[in-house]
Length: 110
Image (tube, rainbow, N blue to C red):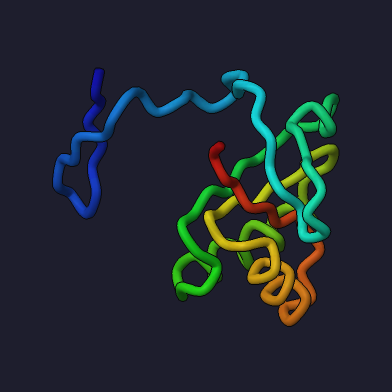
């Protein structure tokens, strides 16, 4: 199944279906900066925003992390999870250098 979205006015087919805002995410596990496992259920009772991007070491992705961090401070009972394919060490370096408080995690499939 595919869905079409528009990017810069042009239709683009995406695989599967993009989840609707407010839909329930399936359980998954992430890797924290200290290499511990983190599950979505650890944030039960909070609104969760998933900022998923390829790499913290690209300008656009870094900007999205900065922006989500800023917006997260304006919304109560909400946690932003910044998720990328980077190693936890790269995320830790970036968030430490930027003084960012939100949670940065690596996603690695088994």
